[in-house]
Structure formats: C-alpha cells, structure tokens
Length: 263
Image (tube, rainbow, N blue to C red; front, side):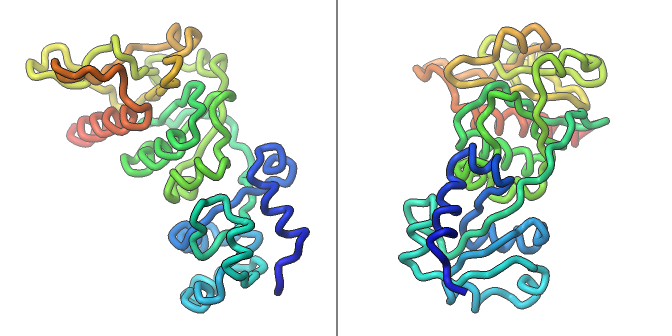
C-alpha cells in the first residue's frame, strides 16, 4: 500500500490535541514502542507506517497478532509524518482507550499529578510509576494531555501497562484520608530521609503521592486535602532552588517502594 496525501494530513493532524480527541487516536513512534505495542496491545493498533527494512525484520509472531493496515513508507515520507526530529524507522496510530472512571486502588500507591503541564515530566512520571509498581497515574483536568506525543515518548511504554484516570480536586476531597491518604511533594514537608531518622517520613502502606507543577507548586485546593507533605532535603552547600518534578517523583517513589516492600 502507498501512503496518500490524505493519510499524511491525518497523521500530522494528530500532533494536536483537538484532532486526537476528534478521532480518538494517537501516534507512537520508534522500534521499541511499536514492538511493545504489538506484543501487549495489538488490538489497539489501527495502522502502521514503517520502512520496508523494519517490516522485514519484524518477527512473524508479532505481525501475526496485528490486524492493522500496514504501509511501507520511504524515509522521506516518514520524515513528513514523524513528530521526532530524527524519525525512528516506524510509527503507528493507536486507538485512545475509553476513559476510566476515577477509583482509587484498594491497596498500594498511585501518583496524582496536580496541574503538571510539562509533557516530558508527565511521561517520565508514568514511566516511574511502571518501574516502582505504582497502581495507576491519576491526573487533574489541567494536567498535560496524556496522549501528547512527547508524553507517550517519555513514558517508554508505560502507557501500555499503567492505567490512568482523570480526577478533579473535588473528587479527591471525597476520599477517606485513612484509606487513601494524600501526601504532597513539597519543599517544606517532612524529609523523606535523614541521618537521625527521628523526623524522617515513614510512608503508609497505601496512598496517593501528589506531584505539583514546578512553576506553581501544589495548588491551594490540593494542599487543604493533604494528610501531610514530604520533602527532599538538599545538600547544605547547594544553591539549587528546586528539583525537576519527575526527578522528585522518582526519588520519593523509590523511598515508598523500598519501605513498603521491606515491611
């Protein structure tokens, strides 16, 4: 099959949120992501656009799961439809999964992203959730679109494994703080660790770890719901003003995982 001008226009339109929402589709790119999608969610793939050499190298068992249309494309065509500065052999259109109603897990930890608008940070935290075994990633309505190409790329396949839900701050207020405590990452909170251990934060068995915007921090409405705040102390000689949101999320998620798994 040859790729048409209409297909190129459609693929390029999916760079924008309004068209992703209109068509219920998003794009993934690169050898690794496509192989994972073919292995784990082949039914969600609607079409594949790839260099002929990549298609020839693909294992038959992966292609056997796929029912999507396959379009061999030239490198020039791939450059036209790719969102990457250096296109990576193949891309695919996937169906956006149906929205899941917000429901906190019965046990374990989840992230809540409070107005986090940087797509790279959102995707990286999705990946962190996957690495540390968090149950889901819940986002506020004003968080970056989960199917933004930069979010998907930064997630490194976590979008295939870690479920998401959108929850307003009002919905969080209905949670039982004893069953689902909210702990916010905040520079003025309890230290996540300390040499004395007397004032260090001890994570409960389950909860929601709230990560706010780097620029604005935690929103006032979320602060009022928190069971507590946890911080990452900086070195005495450090002159840094703050940590990147996804770096902070990774440090705290590691603390939670090591503490809860040890119990």
